[in-house]
Image 1 (spheres, one colour):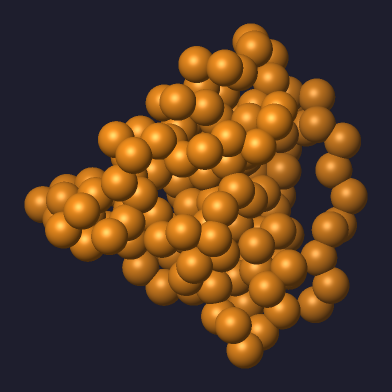
Image 2 (cartoon, one colour; image 1 turned 90 degrees about the horizontal axis):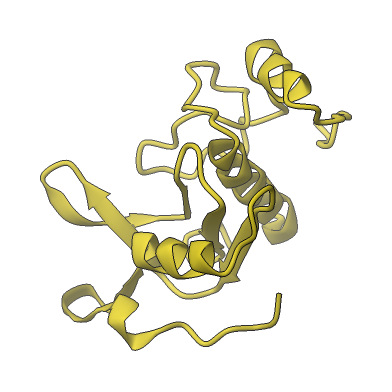
Length: 145
């Protein structure tokens, strides 16, 4: 897929952020069945979180879905950006495959709960890994401790 301009309708003026769900809707329209599109950006992104209409996030993916979005904006600039970003992208792809948040804090699918948890995430836990394997994924250990 080609580089796309972020639509102005996704921009949330009061907080100067882009609404991740709007970006996902746009990407989903151009994603073929059986495929997943990952929108990558450095802009600040957000979504509604209960009573909070503009919760800043590192990424968002619907479960299941055909698209997700991830941003470098909230990553720790003093740590390995590529490693953090890889984990955020893999987490969001996990959601597109139907994986929910996982209570295991070392699992890629753990809920960040407003924090950057990439340092404690090691790999998919056994339960999440088994779900992906049943879907036909071939998984290796991707992360270095």
